[in-house]
Length: 246
Image 1 (cartoon, one colour):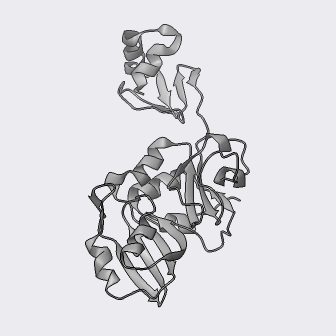
Image 2 (cartoon, rainbow, N blue to C red):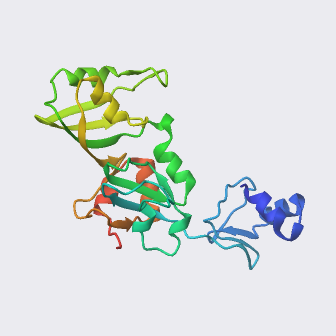
């Protein structure tokens, strides 16, 4: 929402009066005077007109969670435990998931109530890298590396997967970096090279890595300023060096 629209709605003062109040430096957003009526505001911002608070900011949440196998990437389910069930926070039901994982996959899941942040990280056009550790039933053929780079045609969706980086770590172990998130994509890609995924674990989403000391089922809040700075800059050190609160 634009600032002038929010001010105009206050006691139905109207757009003209709102523009005048803004021009007269009577409006503050997060304690800073704003004179641009087109300044974007969201529900996480405190807005004041003169000495009156006309919007109290909601609490913005940014969480990382180490999802165990068997937990659903869902906000509610009547039959199975979900990632929300693992979180102990009074506002947890305002959260949505940024980057779901299959029930049988473990690793990093991000949750937030800030749609702008999750879109920045997960929008397909941004091609944010997602890194997985993969275990397979059969030895991984060396030529699979080139095939993953070329991409695979999926007839059902009529698409060819983006180039993916496959690094073979052992006979049946690899690290895979994707820049998209198709349905069961990793399993389908390995099926194309005559192999089957037996274990899948997500290490990171973009610059956000899963800390080694975060055990399965545990979660940590991210500092809002660090979360946004990291998403915009791609600086993973902010997350790995920040002090998290349990």
